[in-house]
Length: 253
Image 1 (cartoon, rainbow, N blue to C red):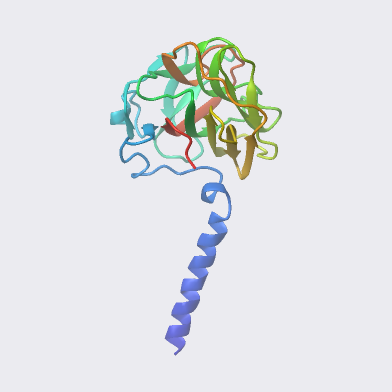
Image 2: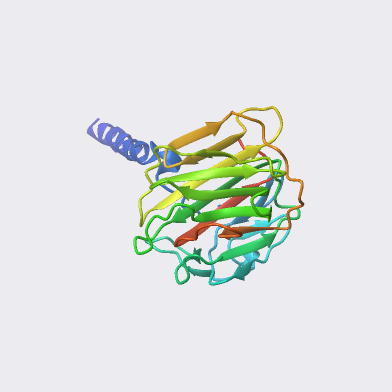
């Protein structure tokens, strides 16, 4: 009987530990990647890159794609060992030339959909660079300030998703209580869609989800050609690491 009670107690203890770890967003501040992070790119999942190795050919670095599989590094963007105990590598931007256009870019064909999509990525802001509002983590901007989707840091500790089509003005949504700190990994998930279905925009980070229902989005009128992780196009450029990327060409519930 004592052995049975001891076994039950052990099971309850383990369950309690798992529950305690998983009550936060994605069982903690950031997703962990791992061997099954990118199993295959099919259906709505058009791009996935864990960044397990120092290799811009993503199929050699824990990745898959429905289109372009080799990134192009611009300015001082590079792949570096992931900081803060994370395994593998990460995109590093802004380390030596804040204000420049560091990014790793891919052709958008078969990957990106400006009318409906979802981007998920992990990011880390080093304390020696600090939190810099306007730092772009992801973007597709075929025509500056007219056709664009971007995920950027906002305020003093929040993150924002912006969509603009056909120079129709900015539609955006930002977290209000993500309380992003430096030297910490976070997962952000951002979604957009044109048409009549609400919400039109959604962003989630560190347990805070905000949605936008004010007005329908306008689709691009300029064909996109590349998307970038880091600062692709205009904008302030702070210091950041990015990894564990997933991109869908549809709104993912």
